[in-house]
Length: 332
Image 1 (cartoon, rainbow, N blue to C red):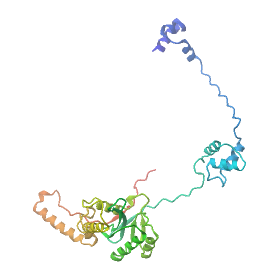
Image 2: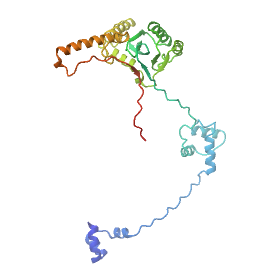
Image 3: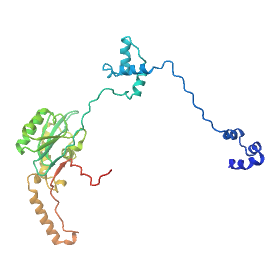
Image 4: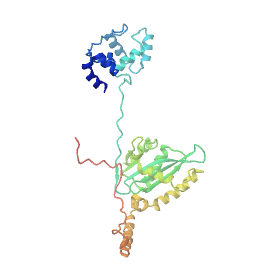
């Protein structure tokens, strides 16, 4: 507003009276009217102690030498000094390395290839087994028992389990030998990357049996979903004691639990059939009987149903990491 009034008064009264009348600074007015002249900034003088390009190249060559490439600049500086040679300060070495992007690791680093995502599919019982080991708390602090569990991923049937006082590769080998001798040799056995799972005795046994060996990726629990889910069912069971008084107590509880899990517990993913029913092939009969019961109920009281009821379907496949479907629309 002041600028607009000043623009109207200045031609009539002059600059000084107009500024005094409006309270405007004349110095500010004159400074704003003065044209801006850009002056080139004078180049600063190079420091007297600055290294020449030749000297900097020599320092960089020394830092890249095989004797020093894996050492910090402080180590290089001290070593050269002990040998009677001084090139520059430690901070200058860091400055030169920083300009060439070599402040971090300057050695050629070996890179590990990404772990392949396991993809396993079972279309019937006995094709793919999954196993894992979990700890059960013993009577005292720091005392644990080790529960080995092997299950069929198609039927969720626990084909073998054992509770031991320790975990070892030899126990794992004997456990797998017992399961395969009782239930037959599967096409593949999946496990995580625990010490027992990746041990040489287990690997050699699976190779001798002709079983494909599959392992989860590091720190990816979803790669072993069936065993992880089964352990959660075990430890969230209302009867689970949390701590066992002895190895015999742990084995007695597991005997009761796995009998119930295999023969009484009805699994949602199995069409509400028991793992034993799906594993041994009686689920088809049971589903047919369920359908007869539902049809009879619909005939008696059709008004209670929005549509004819259908018994839950039986599983057809079980996947560990089903392949990602290829997108139909390609993006640029």
